Amino acid sequence: MARINLLDWREELRQERNKEFWITFALMIVLAALIWFLVNQVMDSRIKAQDARIEKLNTEIGVLKQQTKEIEKLKKEKEELIKRMDLITDLQQSRPEVVRMFDELVRVTPEGINLSSWKRTEQSAGKDQNLKYNLTFTGQGETNPRISEFMRKMDSSERLQTSALKDVQKQTKGLPAQNFTLEARQVIPGKENTEGGN
Image (cartoon, rainbow, N blue to C red; front, side, top):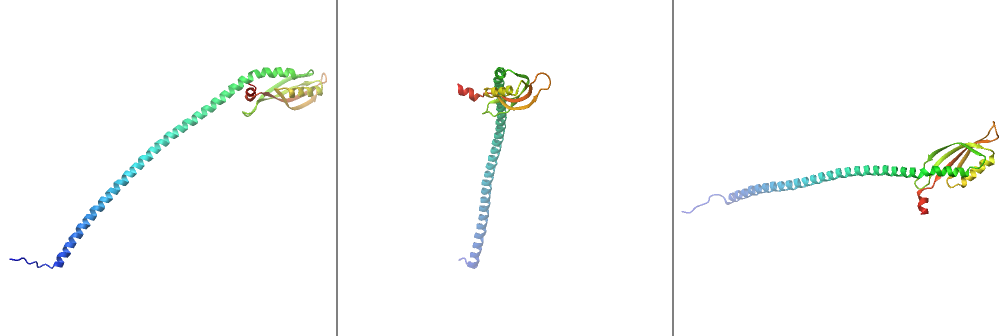
């Protein structure tokens, strides 16, 4: 006996298409979920890699900061050592200079000048200049020409230079004399001069 399909072929086609649609829809949902999962994994791995780089950079920055602090500490220690070395050099250099200054002072002081006191203070000078000391002499001169001669001899000296003559007063008691205060400089030749002579 022959089979007869009573269903309309259009209805069958519509059901077939409806079935294909739901299958395609399900596959698209699965594919979208798979793509979302893969993108999520890739982005997570990139974020983790970036976090690892940032952490490494922060660690390196911490190490560099520590090294910078150590460098600054070493620079300060170096500056202190240089200051100490300069001070020791100045002290070693100035030790014989006092004797030389007295020797020079004896040579430049003419007869008729009596020095009663003197004071020496250090004058700040740059590294390229000679080391200098300010001197203040007080004393008596028989006459003004004697005081002028004292100043001229001091100016012609290698280690002494006059700066200013102050407070010249005539003595009222005893022998006639002029009381004076003379400001001068003691010049200590610097390293440049000694190195240039070698």
